Length: 264
Length: 321
Image 1 (cartoon, rainbow over the protein chains, first blue to last red):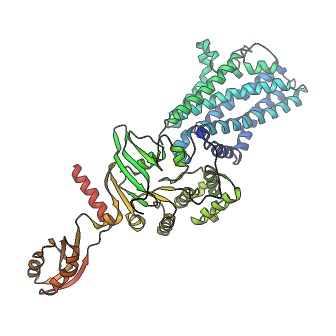
Image 2 (cartoon, helix red, strand yellow):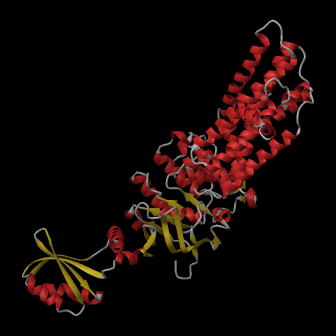
Image 3 (cartoon, each protein chain N blue to C red):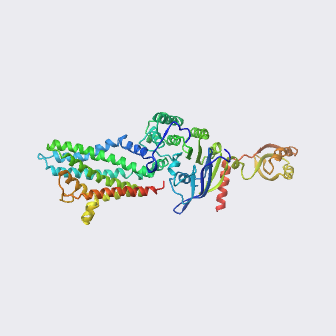
C-alpha cells in the first residue's frame, strides 16, 4: 500500500484476520441501533407480562416450584422463536443483498465473518432475551413471594435456557449457509422447535439429542434440566447439556465448512 | 510505463463455468503496474466474473490467476489487503452511516492511529462530496450517493490495486467527470482495473484496454493501437467535379491500397486506404489539387473506441454464427 506509512497495519493473521472489524460491526448492529431496546422491550413484555399474570392475578401466590417451571417455559420457548426470526436473515440476508460479497472483498476471512455473527448475536440474545427479562422476573418473584430464588441455581438455570437458544441460533446460522432463501431456513428451524415434543413422543430416544428437555417439561414429568436446577431437583440428565452444546458447536463447524465453499 | 514495468495481474487460461454456462473461457490477461486498465464488454461478457475470481469471491473452474504474484485462491486475504474494490452495485450495511462505513473498511486495514484514520475518512468524504451527509444512515442514500461512497471506501486503504466494477454507472455527467479525474490522479500511486460499458470514459483515461465477449477475450492492447483500427491508415476525402479522373490518378499510386466510395451531403465521399502514411501525407492532397475536382474535406480517419468495440463484438458474433 502506498501513502499509508502513518498507519499501524492490522496485525491479525490466519483465520482471525478481520474478526475484530467484523465483530465490532456486528456488535454495533445490536448495540448502536434501536435493536437492543426493542428486543428487551419485546421479551420483558412477553415473559414478564405472562409471569406477572401468574403471580398477581390470583390472591394466593402459586407454589414457588410452579412459578419456576412457568417462568422457564416462557423464557425458554418464546425467545427461541425470536432467535430463529433474527438469525434467519443473518447469513441469507447478506448473501442476497450483496453485503457479504462486499465485506469479503476486504481482508476478512470467511471464518471471521461467520464467527463474528455467532459471537455478536449470542451476546445480543443472552443480554436481551435471557438476562434482562430474567432480572425483571427475579424482582417480580421477590415482590410477589418474598422468597427469592436461590441465586446460583437461578443463574445455572439461565445458562441452560441460553444453551437452548444457542442451539437454535447455531442451527439457523448453519441453515443460512446452505440455502439462498429465507423460507427453508426459518421453516426448518421453527419446524424443529415446535415438532420436537411430538418427535420425542414418537421416538423417546430423540429426547437425548433434542433441546426440548433442557428447559421444557414433557407432559407432567418434571425432568427438564433448567427447572430441576432452579428448584434443586436432581431428576435430570446432565448429559443433555453436553450433547446440546456439542451439537451447537457441530452446527457452527458445518456452517463454517459450507460457507468456505460459498460463491458470491 | 514500459516493458520492464511488472505485472500486477496475470491470468492463465482462467475459466469459470456455472452449471452448463461458460461465463469465462480461458482468459489470459496481463495488467501492468500503474496502468489504467479498461475492461470492456457487453452485459454477460464475463467482466464481473473475472473481478470476483481475482478477489477470491468465486473459484475458477480451470486455469489460475495471480495478483501481486500471489495466488488468488491460496492467498486471497493477503491480496485483498492491498486492493480497493467497488462492486457493480454497492451494498453497505444499512444501519451504518457513511462515516461508520468508512471506519469499518479502514478498520479492516489499519488499527491506528485513530486521528490519522479519521483524517483519512474526512479526506475520502470530501473527495466524493459526501461530507455534509457523512452522518446520515446509508438507507437514506440515493443510488448516486451510494456509488460515491463506494468509490470512497475503495480508496480508504491506499490500495496498490483499485478494482472498479462499473464505477460511473449510476453517476450523473459531473459525477462521472469527477471519477475520471480521480482515476487519472491516482495513476501515479496505484494500478486501476475497471470494467465499464461507457466507452467514452475508457477512451479518456485508459492506457490499456481488453474487450471481452461471451466470456472470451476478443481484443487486447494499448488504447492507441486499438484506436488505430484494423484497417490501417485511412483518409476521408469529400470532393466534387471529375471524380473518375482523380480516382485513376490516386489508384495509380503504389501506396494506395483501395478506395471505398460513399456519399456525403450530395458530394462524393472517399475512404482511401494507404500502406505508406508518409507518402500519403506528402502526396495525396497534391494529387487531388492537380485534378479537376474541388476537395471540400480532407482528413485522416480517427477511430472512436465505440467503432472498434462494435467491429470487434460484431466480428466476434459473425465468427461464432
